[in-house]
Length: 368
Image (cartoon, rainbow, N blue to C red; front, side, top):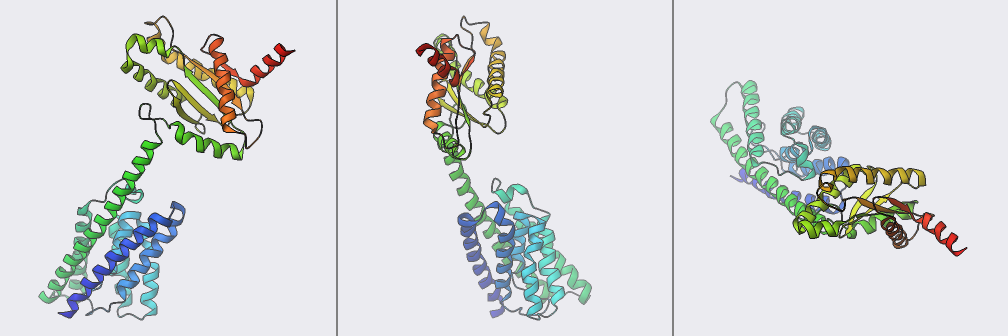
């Protein structure tokens, strides 16, 4: 009976190793390192499983396949096959009995079989791994071993079948435990990510809020010159008073949708507060910025043509633009300048844009 305690001990060890690996992954791994460290950790787990000797040839086996199952299911075939390199080398160095047979049956076959059930969403943690996959994979491996043994021995003994059924139960239970652990870790990660997203996202428009905008804009300004656009929805108070707050909220959602779909892909848009939005742009050329702002004003006006037919004051946007004079400019100063330019756009009649530099030129003329 002692031989039946070997897989039970190995199963407990593997669960512990899986817990440690998950913690290492959450603390240390990034996507770039995961390609290397995932097969490395999987291979080491296989070797630890192999340190328990096989109780009998082709009969009761160790759990070296289980880490490969997880690698194939979660990461796909390339990483699963890479995960077999270390245990294969260990088998060859340790002069294991029937070495090539064990490599094919307990390493390569599990890598190929488990990879069939791989989904890329399992890797990034956005989708839980179904428990049924563990039962399917273990069953296929069980049938494969019976088939291979039948071809080699020509007659299956009840002792062998009983051993394999015992291993099927141990492997399935351990595999299910590993999947549950991974799914629980992913749920915790998704919950944390959702909380972070909610903290950095405006609940009404689903745009980033000012809290998330400021550090991103500061980091960008530390590297290069950038421009800030302050964008304000014209006549919003009148519209809100006329149609109510629910319609006003819907108007804010609509304008955020328009802006989000017409800004440049590399630019960053956030809700500043109320009916104001703030845009961080890598464009610093005044002419191109003018064309950019003009296009945003036009698209906003076009989007609200149907609403403007029913109101005395049209729904449009006004924009104020400020460009950093050099890298590492003060973000708060840029926002102040863009805000002053926005006020000038409002004063000039709305549905237009103003560069802060134009205000400086105008002030110089007035002072002269």
